[in-house]
Each structure stands twice: as structure tokens, then as C-alpha cells.
Amino acid sequence: MNIIERMNYFNIPSVSVTCFADGKIDWSKHFGTLEKGTSKEVDDNSIFHACSISKMITAICVLRLAQYGELDLHKDVNEYLISWKLPDSEFTKTKKITLANLLAHQAGLRDYDDIFSLCKIGDDAPSLVDILNKAVNIKYEPETDCEYSDAGYSIISQVLLDALGETIPQAASWMIFKPLGLTRTFFWEPNKNEYDGISLADCAVGHDKRGNAVKEVRAVYPNIEGAGLWTTTRELTIIITDLLKSYHGNGGLVLNQETARLMLTPYGCTDDVGLGVFLDKDKEGKPFFVSQGWGVGMQCKLRCYHEGQSGVIVMTNSDPGKDQNESLVGEIIKYVFDSNGADSKSPKIIQ
Image 1 (cartoon, one colour):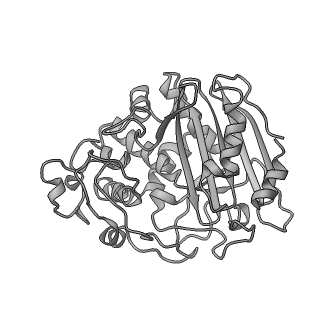
Image 2 (tube, rainbow, N blue to C red; image 1 turned 120 degrees about the horizontal axis):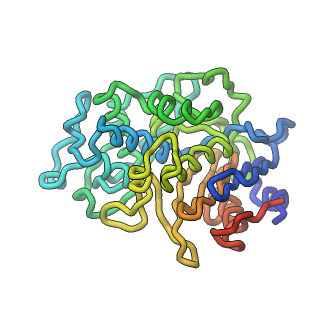
Image 3 (cartoon, one colour; image 1 turned 135 degrees about the horizontal axis):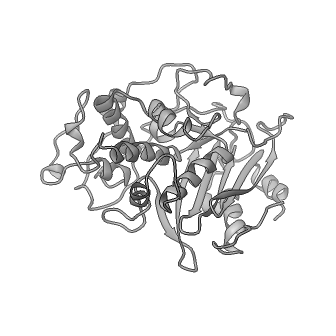
């Protein structure tokens, strides 16, 4: 695979890829620059916007809290909520909305278009309560359908605030990032200009499908829990491989085996959604899980075979105008694994 040729074809200034096998990092490759026309090359330390992969991290936080009895995945979330309540609805008279419903996008919510507008870095964002008053729209009974919902994850964030007095960035820091020794992974809050010494210059600049830097070169969203994560492919891999250790009972630091297996098991009314991740099978019938992000100027995806403990993470500083399966992100994932098979001990390396 001629990666530079494909980057030029898609007008993508930079690509970062980390591949893991047998639960350990196998190789990392980085191409291009953090911003088109500049000389700062991408490397292991380059930070990209993970966009909706944020939801997987939020899910891990909730599951860890449930693991230790601080939250109940199957309790009516209105029993936790204080500052804001889910409105009465004909659809929740007999079946209440729970954290498990929200994690699996099966809470009966239908998001309004464009409910989460970009914030300028350094500016104050709307409060969670303001967001929820505008965003929550209950349209069907919980667990009767699956519909992707950003608003659902904002409800989860409010539960943590009201029940435990913690924000998602705070919870993720002490539960995930610090125990795993991550120094370049964080939730970017709109009112911050830097994070623990990491400045804007350390982070990739977003670009459009023509390869031009977008107006908001580093997009920040008010729904931090659903779209606020910034990280490197290598540090995101450390989170995933720790989850795999837990899944196989090999001493993961964040979740225990029971909780990790619950996360990666089909939930509710569909077989293709777990708690915070999506589930699928390859052409040989081997199961894997997926988390992906697509926002202003950025696109990324991870694919992981939890039984074989192998996978790949791809992050780019480009919005190619097409979904991951049709973009360079999807091309790389297919090249690395579909040609070799998920059980390969040495996934194919891109050049």
C-alpha cells in the first residue's frame, strides 16, 4: 500500500496508525505533518481529535463505577438526576431509561440536527443543563430500537455530576489515564487553552476534503463526554490493550473481567451494539468491536478482535467528506487485516 499516494488522493495532510497483536503494540507508522504546508511531522506523540471515540471512554468510566457499586446500570436515571430531569413521556411509562440503555444507544432518543455547535477554544460553553433542555427528544420506548444518540451521552454526564459530583474529564483522568500512565490523552474542555502543559501546537490541525485547514482548526464541542477526547494512536492503543487484558482475565488495570465482557457483549434489542462500542464480524465470521469518530477536520476509527487481541487504530487530520469505510481510514484497516486475517501474529505493515 503506497500510503503517500493514497494521502495525496484524499488530500489528507497526516495519518497516524498503531497496530497491536496478542495484546501488545506490534508497530506504529506516522505520515505527513500536523498542518498542511508546515514542517512539523507527525510522530508517536502527535495528538489527534478522537471525536466520537470519546463515547467509548465515557462508557469505560461508567462501567468502572458500576463495577464498584457506585452506579447501577439498570436503575431509572431520573433517580440519579437532580439538576435536570428526563421529561415525562408516553414512551417511558412502563420502561424507564437506564444507563445501560444510554450506553447502547437504546434509550428511545432521537437527536435533533445540529444540536452541538462548535465552541471556540477558550470560550465558555453552554452548561449541561442548557444542552439537555435543547437536545433531549424521547421518540420511542427504550430497548425497542437502536438509534445513535449524542444527547444520551450528555445525560450520562449529568448523572455523574449529580450523583457523584464529577465531570467526565475528572473521572477519566483518575480511573483511566493516570493508572495507565497516559500523558497525552485528555478531554478538551472548551474554556481551556491548554491541558497540563500540552498546547495547541502539539495537536493536529483539522482539514477539509480539499486539504485546506478548516476555520475552527482544532474543533471543540460542548458535549465533552461524546466528542471531547484528544489522544495519540499509541496511547489509545494502551487503553484498548488494557481492556483486552481484562476481557481475558489477564490483569487489566481499569475493568475486571466480568465488566469488560459485559461491555463487549451484545446488549438489548440488537446484536451489533455493546455498551459504548459497536460489534461486527468479518467475512470469516470472526467477531470484532469498533469505535469511530468523525468531526470537523478529523476522522478516525479503531477495529479490534477481542478474542484474538489484535487490532488497528487510524487517526487523520482530515474530514474526507465520506464515511470511514469509503475513506483512507477504511482502506488502511482493510489492508492491515482483511488480507491477512484477524489471527495474524504480524499484521501487514503499511509503507
